[in-house]
Image 1 (cartoon, rainbow, N blue to C red):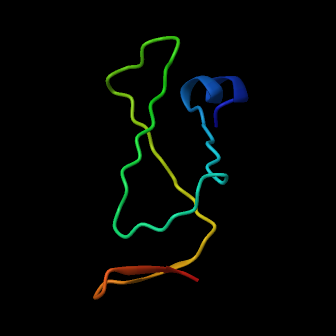
Image 2 (cartoon, helix red, strand yellow):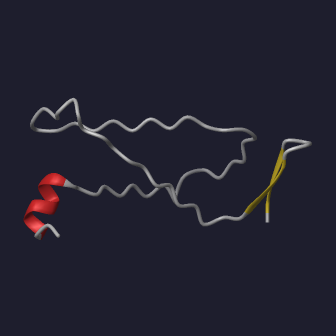
Length: 70
């Protein structure tokens, strides 16, 4: 376990709230690009992970490629 000060330095967590964005349905995938600016250069060995949580429920029919909000 890392103490809070070291966790902030070595494993920061960022939260972006997109809940007030325009609601549109799009069939297929989307490309999301997030860029961070840091005060100090990051190592080339740095890895970033992303977890996207969505509060809506959808159904997808792979035969018709139709996405519907429940």
